[in-house]
Amino acid sequence: MTALVPLVVILPILGAAGALVASGRPRLQRTIAAVTLTAVLGIGIALIAAVADGGMLVMPVGGWPVPFGIVLVVDRLSALLLTVSAAVLLAVLVFSIGQGIADGDDREAPVSIFYPTYLVLAAGVFDAFIAGDLFNLYVGFEILLVSSYVLITVGGTEPRIRAGTTYIVVSLVSSTLFLAAVGAVYAATGTVNMAQIAERVQALPPGVQVLLHVMLLTAFGIKAAVFPLSFWLPDSYPTAIAPVTAVFAGLLTKVGVYAILRTETTLFPGPELNPVLLVVAGLTMLVGVLGAIAQADIKRMLSFTLVSHIGYLIMGVGLGTAAGTAAAIFYTVHHIVVQTTLFLTAGLIERRAGTTTITRLGGLLAASPLLGVLYLVPALNLGGIPPFSGFLGKLGLLEAGAAANDPLTYAVVGIAVLTSLLTLYPLVRVWNVSFWRPAAQVAEGSRLTDELHEDPFRPATVDTRSLAAPMVLATAGMVLLGVGITVFAGPLYQYASDAGATLQDWPVYVRGVLGR
Image (cartoon, rainbow, N blue to C red):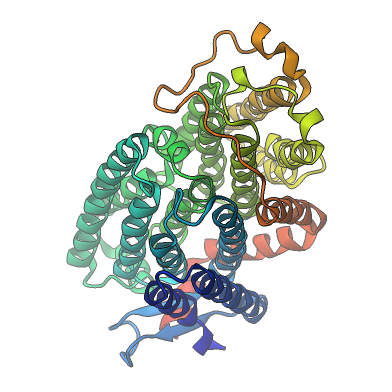
C-alpha cells in the first residue's frame, strides 16, 4: 500500500505532460485529465482505508533512509484531505469540460494550457498534503503558485491580469517568508524533517522557538487568507473563470490551513500562541462576514464568506484540544465541498443571466427551478442551518470552545455564533433578490440592495450562454456530496475525532515517521 503514496503526485505530473503533448486534441486532453484525477481519487479512498485504524504510511523517496531524504507521509488527516481534494478537482474538471464544449474550447480557457496546468495544480495540492518535511511542503506550495498564476490569468483580460498581479506579489511575499523560515528552522535544528523538528525544537531557547513559530504562521496565514492577511483574496478570486474560481476557493486556502494545523500540532504543539490564533480567528470571522454583507456581486460576497469561514477553522486549531482539532478537520471537509459548490453555482448564474450582480438579477427561480435548488441547498449548508453539515461542524467548534473555560475563548465563541447568524443575511438576500423577486421588478430596485458595493473591475453584464449538461451535473454532484457529508456525518466526525486525537499526541507522528 505504501507504493501508492507517491502516485498521487506522479500521476498528475505525468498526466500534465501527456495533456501538453496532446495539445490541439482537446478530447484526448479531457480524457487524460479525467482518468488521472479518477485514479488519484481511487488511490485516496484506498489510503483512507489503509490508515483508518490509526496506522501511518511512510515512503522514503530515492532510497534515502529517513530522515535524510525526502519522506512522504500519509496519516488520517492527509488521506482524508487528499481524497476530498481529488473529488472536488474531478467535479470541477467535469464542469470545465462542459463549459469548453458549450463555448468552444479556446473562448476563455485554451485547453492546450488549461488542462496541463490544472493537473500541475492538482499535483501541488496533493504534494502539500503528503509532505513529511518542510522543504517538500514549500515545493508543493510553489507548484501551486506557478500553476495558479497561469489559471487565474487565463484568457488575458485586464481584470484577470490585475488580479493575477496582486495574487502573485502576495504569494511571492509569502513564499519568500516561508523559505526564510525553512532556512531558519534548519539552522536551529539541523533538519527540515517534521518529525525530527518536533523532537529537537523542544531544546531550543524559548525566544528562538517563538520566532520560528511566528515566521511559519505568518507565511501560512497569508496563504490561508486570515485577517489581516486576507486583503488580496476578494479582489483576486472572483475575476477568474468559474472553474478556476471554484477550485481556488475550495482548496487553495485549505492548504494553508492544513499547514497551520501541522505547525500547531506537530512542530510547535505548545499553547503559547493559541490566544493569538483565537484573536485572529475572531477578527477573520467578523471582517469577512461584514465584507460579505456589503457586496452586490455574488462572487465577491462568496469570497468574503470564504475569508469569514477560514476563521472557524483557525478557531478550532487555536483551541489546542483534540475536540477543537476534530471539529476543525470536519469543518474543513465541509467547507471545501460547500464553498466549491456555491462558486460553481455562481458560474451557472452568470451564464444563465449574464451577470452575478444581484441588483441586475431577478426571476431566476421561475426561469430555472433547478438552478434555485443548486443554490439554496449549499447556501443553507454554509449558513449552518440544521441538520446540514455546516451546523454540525459549527456545533462541534462551539462545544469545544465552551469546554475551554476561558474568557477569551468564550468571546470567540460568541463571535462565531454572531458570524453564523450574519452569514445567513447575504445568502438569503441573494435568494430573495435574485431568485424570488420577479424579473419585471428588477428595474424598480430593492431596499435590500440600495447600499451595496459593486465590483468596479467587473463588467455589468456579459453574454448569456447555455448551461451545458456536464456543468449542471458536476454542480449537482457537488450538492449531493455536501448532502452526503450530512448523511454520513457520524462516521466522518468519528474519523475526524480519531485524527484530531492523534494529531494532538505529536509523539505518535514522530514514532510513525522515525520508527522510534
